[in-house]
Image 1 (spheres, rainbow, N blue to C red):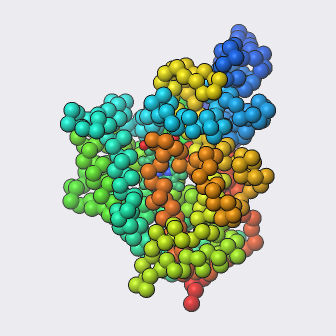
Image 2 (cartoon, rainbow, N blue to C red; image 1 turned 60 degrees about the horizontal axis):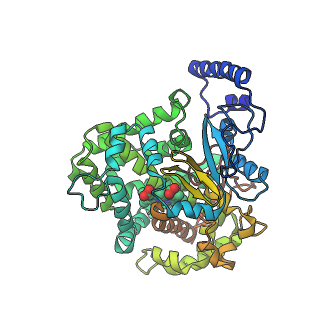
Image 3 (tube, rainbow, N blue to C red; image 1 turned 90 degrees about the horizontal axis):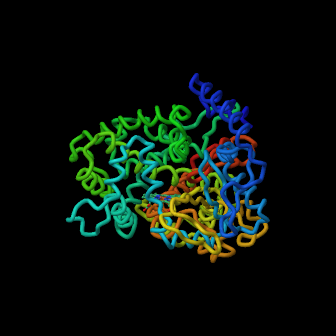
Length: 511
Ligand code: HEM
């Protein structure tokens, strides 16, 4: 396993890496010699009310390597090891234990007690890993001053602003702008340019293309065209960064995430240059960005802190919608009968003046909605963490202050007792046949409780808009015979899964 880790294209083999590896070997030998723990025994847990530990071979390292190689597989293994009861169990990553939750009831309890099971510390750590200082992370989540009547702080208040920005007439303005942007990006000239030669045939790598264009569209709507002028490569850099972002999220030591850090550094300089422009030169359709900036400018003074926050925000609004749209477009265009149904279903959303009503798409296209939920169910693999802030229980399992919990949306979403025997397969009509499933506790692509994703409606409008525009303008067929892409399970996921395979399609203008 270690050898495949070493040979993985994701790991840069540098002198530091080799040094680390040697230290690792020496440490393992010392640990095994002096504190050999028999496989399967459990150091910490003795009492009945503590979650049982999944056996591991080496102290300290515990399940680290298997978690990094394939977190979903490890959690599956743990669930099955304990008889698939969906009771809580623990794993060890770099000496820290994490309680693993796979029961939707337990996850609902966590969401209902945001103070006891807090998310803030996890977000702060992620922001720091992007380059912000500890002090910045502290002040951003603290009430600004006595004048801060809501006593909430910059980031918690921004959640409320984001909800306002992505509902009602503000959502209408935003999605109208994004549709205009996507129409330009899907013009025959732009599509011809995006085609490449693959296996000797002119084709469009449609998932990659959709990903990049959704990030670009969200960037343009939230930051205005100036950010693109400063750095035209930012959408591509964001994709590259996002593929490695788990390394920041899980606090991988700096010498093992040099590529991620250097990308981050490069991107931070673009956000800095953007923030250096006078505010009247950075008009964006989303008023949110200006309001957010005004509030963080009051508490932050350091340029890098501000740029890191902008990057965090950009990543949050762009990556998950981009990946989800990639899968949505892929499934719909790969299946000819689905293409036809959805083309017909979405046609009335186009008005006589050519504008597209995304509210119609979101409310009156049941097949499209079913495919959207199915994509989120099958490919959202968000592994979410929480810090326990006070002694508490879930069922008969006890948690101490300082404990850490982890749960994955995908573990819930693949539950055969809820989503039937074919839960692991893609079924476009699943939510059409049983619309109640969209309210299931086992469907948690956007989290839940107080921190539930505020951008979920916008994400749906944007993804559906791209599908409707593509199907109206083009006949889309596989460029050559190929298998449908598979989700890549090889990194710990912190959002919608991606694929290593491409889907190569040919787009021909409809007459
Ligand atoms: C398919 C698309 C998306 C998915 C799957 C997704 C997923 C999530 C999840 C799972 C969380 C909650 C994490 C937790 O509580 O553990 C979250 C939070 C958040 N999302 Fe999204 N998201 C998506 C799109 C968006 C968009 C488009 C925006 C902004 C326009 C956005 C902004 C945020 C913000 C600001 C939070 C933090 C909420 C808080 O902590 O108060 N997301 N998202």
